[in-house]
Length: 323
Image (cartoon, rainbow, N blue to C red; front, side, top):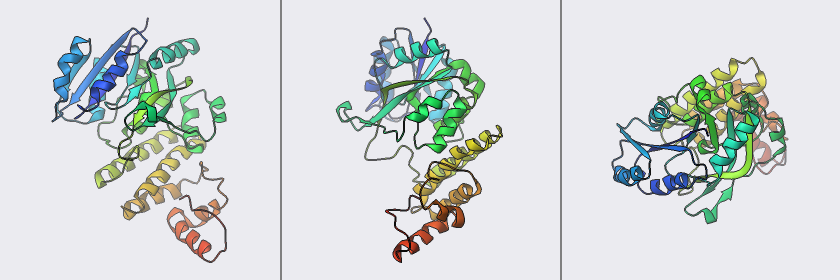
């Protein structure tokens, strides 16, 4: 039976880490290696280690270097054929690893993902991620298919929804430790770039903890924004290697999302994202919007002002400007 290594980076995670580790200990898959890496916590996270180790969990401490460095540390230690990444406050269904390993072996896949949902405290309030269309899953076979679909359809996959063969990670390379925002997006873009066969487990088995109404990737500081720009520029450079223009929809959607998030708190950075968005002359998931011509003609930034003018003087009818 194949060994699966579960890598959990933890920083000041005393509040939730026990429950997260327990969700791994509760897995029905019997051949697991659980690795918790404390990233220089200043709370009582390490006080939990003694209890974890009594249950067979490997506990490692490192200086504070960030989650990506902690995950890389875990990858180097991991002995498993498969890698499951799990953040210190998230949870997974007891059958997740069992069902994904079985699916991947049956279909000879090097990468798999499962559906996911988000919760605040109790799984009783779990809200499934709503896919606008599920028919696009029928056309997914490779990692490049997923990258293309990310751009043309409005969906994402969370870190712990994936199960990855370790040899695929070795091919794609380690996590980029210079990135603090969208580090998972940049890392899994490289994984997807090399993935030859994807399998999809169409059950909700990954649970994301969402506190205080926060989004998955908040851009609330210049450091995070600069990191986000770098991550999407790297993804842009990666897809250019394929000479497949349709893949550019993926970084285009990334620039769009970050433009929206920075438009009001950081307008100067929003203009940078907007310029990168405008420079990619390819369709993406909002292209079918009836007034997308405004964006195409005026650009994403000026287009917003033009849209408001047209609405004000009732020259067009629309509920909202999506950009």
